[in-house]
Image 1: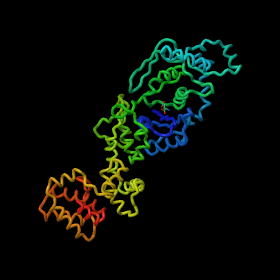
Image 2: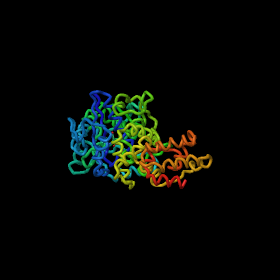
Image 3: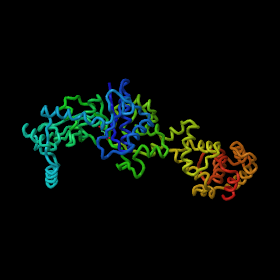
Image 4: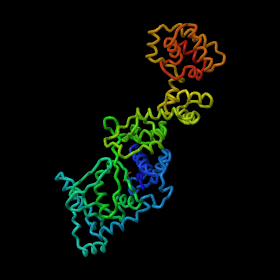
Amino acid sequence: MRRTRFAPSPTGFIHVGNLRTAIYTYLIARGDKNGKFILRIEDTDRERFVEGAVEVIYETLKQCNLTYDEGPDVGGDYGPYIQSERKNSYKKYALELVEKEEAYYCFCTLERLQNLREEAQNKKENFIYDGCCKSLSKAEIANKINSGIPYVIRQKTPEDNVTTFKCEVYGQISINNSEIEDQILIKSDGYPTYNFANVIDDNLMKITHVVRGNEYLTSTPKYTLLYKALGFVEPTYVHLPHVVKEGGKKLSKREGDAYFSDFVKKGYLPTAIVNYVALLGWSPEGKKEILSLSELEKQFSIKRINKSPAVFDIQKLNWVNSQYLKKMDDIEFSKLCLPYLIEGGIDINNQEWTNKFCLLFKDRLSSISEITKYYQQFLAEFILEEEAAAFLKENDCGEVIKVFKGKLSAIETWNSENIKTALNETGIETKVKGKLLFMPMRIATTGMLHGPDLPRSLELIDKDEVLRRIEKC
Ligand code: GLU
């Protein structure tokens, strides 16, 4: 039975890459009908801890429908699911390793280590702890501990040979043991290091698949050595490629494209974000790319994860999101638009007008926040676009515009049906057809060559304003 875990460190925001890890971790669990998806908060690094960050994780997973079967707020048989609450359970495993001579006490002072580090730096070598304390006798160790000298516990890396592990995405990787430092398992404050806690927890929680970013590939040999020394079964590793922008640039906080919340704020739907992010580094077998979470659950396979960096393409996200917006229920869609309209200072008191306005653009938005841009373009001010002006210049449009204006002025009840009739009658009367009929009418009233259905658009603009625009044109 598969058991996977998403193990974020609560740093405040969910990065797009992290979200992708969560999605794949979830999907791998759901690929087994008895599979379990677990949330574990890795908060042992208190310096990086951010207030409220754990709640952001819960909230994000909820918004994305990535329901976990076990976790801090839902419970489970393998809790606690917050690492800082497990702090005291790790040391005994380190002591077992000392007992088996797979680990040892190290009393080296920070000063000594710093000197070694500087020496290595001067020689332009990588610093690796020299194993000085490995040969201390039992009596020496007992003496030092009794006199209260601070110590850490380090794992003894086998001196020769290589360490090999297999990642489902990157294949088999081997590294010479001479390059692997005797890693610290327990720090001088008695608490575990990050790597040690991670391995123990994965084992205690019976995790079968470890899914994480490929920045962990370099420390995986250390994990392998730990599993071996502890006699634990090693999980299946699935390391995921980086998510980058075109040209290899990093997604950035400053450019507002690094975090899940950045996209939600801009009016991308969590369902669409999940769909798009799932395609970053994985591809379905068929051509269909609009896939709901349950479709993803059926189709996802580790085999189709790509190891080259995944390129984040905002145009594609726009397209995916627009597909989701189109399919949305009208009322729900209008409701989602409201906060953006309010923020844009747009009067939403007339509910009927507001609904019609929102729905007019439902098929055209790539993110909901664009609705205010459309308001500016369509309603706030009349600007004759350059291309539109050129069209008027190049074609003889005077007659159509004149007749159309007459028809519009005669309308008593200003609604889209009557406007449509005026439009049709203009065609009949002037005997002009196609582009030469529709373009002048659209340009004279909206200033643009393209836009949503014209009668429905004009209905939302005040009649006097429409006539004024034609005059100005
Ligand atoms: N806590 C790690 C992170 O947030 C995850 C490590 C892992 O999944 O093994 O990047």
